[in-house]
Length: 221
Ligand SMILES: Cc1cc2nc3c(=O)[nH]c(=O)nc-3n(C[C@H](O)[C@H](O)[C@H](O)COP(=O)(O)OP(=O)(O)OC[C@H]3O[C@@H](n4cnc5c(N)ncnc54)[C@H](O)[C@@H]3O)c2cc1C
Image (cartoon, rainbow, N blue to C red; front, side, top):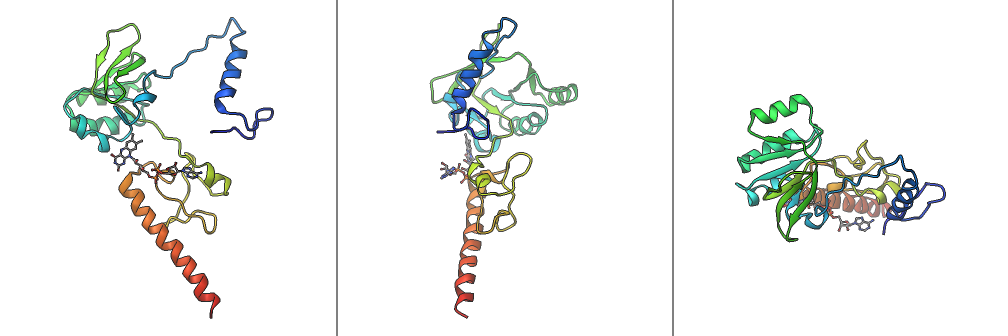
């Protein structure tokens, strides 16, 4: 269960309750139109047709129509990887600047600026995107190219320094800026996967054990 902290009158409230209360208040104003741009079906297919890592999940969906969504900064590098898996790649985004659209076009990547209204699938695989006022577009997978929000709450509560994206600062042995606190994997880097996290884990475990051995060893001398 998530709780919000530091917002006077809402300390300890759930983020969902805060959003619901805000929507209720805003709905009183005839001049305000609330637009829900969450894509229906995306959450249900997370990890089962909706992915973030083009290296992890591209091969399994090779030669299908691969859809990609995200901002200018992220779309080109992910699109480039996806074109290695399939000749049929479309970037669904209205946030691409002209140079990026031209770059994608030059490499055979389609750009579709119509908003995604819904993702269709059976819960285990995805089948199509519903676009606003347009026929469904069949797809084999949807890749979401965005900055993930690192789950850094515990590290922040312990006082560990984080970078501008929320990743916990660590040194080569995965020590954080707080003594006797190590951090590994996704919470420390955008470029993380299982192998890298396991490697981090070994480094941190060795360093942690070394620190404990040093302490015991020095106490007995
Ligand atoms: C859809 C998807 C597909 C992926 N596919 C692949 C793939 O095919 N191959 C690959 O190598 N990588 C893949 N990845 C990436 C890979 O899953 C991660 O990089 C890896 O799991 C990171 O390991 P981690 O230990 O850092 O984090 P996690 O695996 O997220 O483990 C962190 C654990 O800490 C727990 N935790 C968090 N906060 C607390 C707390 N305060 N107290 C106690 N416990 C806590 C969490 O519940 C979780 O169990 C994929 C990721 C996604 C999202």
